[in-house]
Length: 243
Image (tube, rainbow, N blue to C red; front, side, top):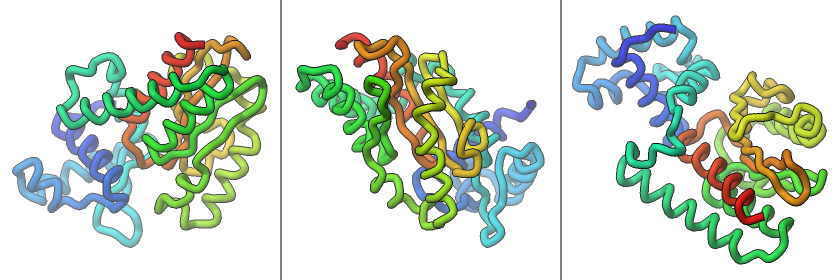
């Protein structure tokens, strides 16, 4: 897929703005940021929409990212977990606070199961998503209330779709055993619950329970992928080292 550098930056800005506000992003807002006319932004947005990377909700003049748009964005974050210096000062400080919180929560535990639960609980607090981990063949979940207070889940249909995904998540993890250190399934990419409009971000790690233990989060497709991916991968790496 070929897009210009300006189109890429506009897409990234739409995704990041939407993650913060949960409101469709309009051309006037973007025009101010890019110091061009709203007409220029609308033309660029039309191209992004043709490519299927953004969409226009029926009730709004603004645009929101699609699953394909999020995937393009996530793929552009290659190396983000290692390349800390490329982040802004605000992002770097936020990530440092997050990793420190994980270290404190996990380091205070003396047993493997409580350490994993502590890491999950910390991820819930840091991301606002639902946290999950496999512990000895069981799926530990935390933060369901935090997840369902996000604006996307005012729709009963979406809540039911997420519930169906969670009902089938543990057996799917056991059977599919995703092999990457960090696995990201966005919206319809989810092998179960394709219509739940959520993203599943999980890290594989070795533990006393299994060589294929998993920790991660499940949240709306609208989220800060750079931060969440970094924290989930850090949690997995840290647990593997400690346990």
